[in-house]
Length: 586
Image (cartoon, rainbow, N blue to C red; front, side):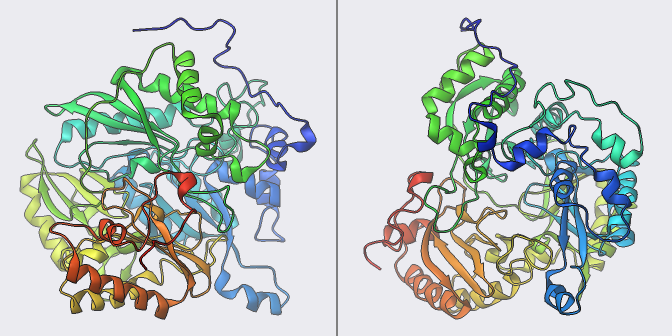
């Protein structure tokens, strides 16, 4: 059934600034005056006096997929020596659905070794990051990526970030279809400005009056995240997306999507007006309508998102401030069709299945455990060296998982044994020997490169997991798949607020401890203890883990147990996240 579109509504209207210009957030004026993200980036790159770019150019370069950072391990030392910070840049690749070829992965590893710090980082949004790139090498990095068909457009910034999709090795036909859609969404809805070609490839482009027909000169109020998932595995944490599509399939044939809107992880501690939020399912569409929904939703956020207070500018706050009924009506007006009733589906896990699997097309797939996503050689584990050897013989796909692991996909029968031998040689299959709690752990980068980090994460979590494993072993729970996620700050890049045990940094060595999420990504957790150190974390977990071992119900997950036993109350919505933190009984 269709509805008549109100002719008074201009579906492609530019954002109407409904408040005085002097009330807008300064970033809005910066974008307006940037000549569609050009700024003075070219001049900043040519300035050899400093390793940095100007403050405004640093913000604009995020839209180009580049973050300016500095080495925080030596920041104080350099300050005492009256030197500027050790500036460097993080480069994030646009990699829709996390799929890359052998040629692309080889190029990425070569770039990392020649221009970066010798490592690659798999992110929780299925892409690669290069760290510690110096300013004078940025052009070479971008051009080297381009040579193998990669770019960094919209990997950061106030736009549509990298589009995620389910890894799904067992149903190859379904994966191919949702991956193709993820790729098409990304290609259609990234910024169209000529700034990228002008800055990084020295191609003179003319600044056009309507250079961004979708975004306009001020782009979106904040970042916007899109994902596609295939039940029953919720590997991309679909409810953490601003806009999510849950594939509905019959006999492995894609027929349409349940739509969910309004997810997002970040918040500010002790500011009740900010909170993580899980997306709400609002209806169903046939698969042919997905691009209409994406465009309309982006435009709604463009036109109605908060451009005064960036802390309130994410789409989740637009939804809560305007109301879901308002959004659904606005969406239907802009698309010209009504949403159908959502279809039945369920999720049972948001983790990865490590090791070998065989798809219905008789192709083989193997998923390798990459602890916290860092690809480098270390003692007894030759990740970088092993992948170098693998790309020389495996010409299928490499798929990055949202849990920071990597899959070799579409392996032919005749190459399986050869690949197994390489995995054994470099001990790349050792992930299967790790505890399930380690397999289900995620950490963000944090120190030393992230400027927002308040505490360690990637470098610290492995050691903490070892101590938690000792507790689990004592209570015969070492085989339990409890999800633990750590973030160095409350922005939640590792999606800690969905995990059964979440830790977010408050200061060096101090964390907030959250409990009560689920193993399938369908419930937020809640603050249990605030600003505690490692000894306190382990003490609290020791008590609860022992209780869980003694009194859990058959097949009861850790997250469900802590709620049933009153350690925390179940979170019912984003606005409820900061209310009544602790349960009654503990």
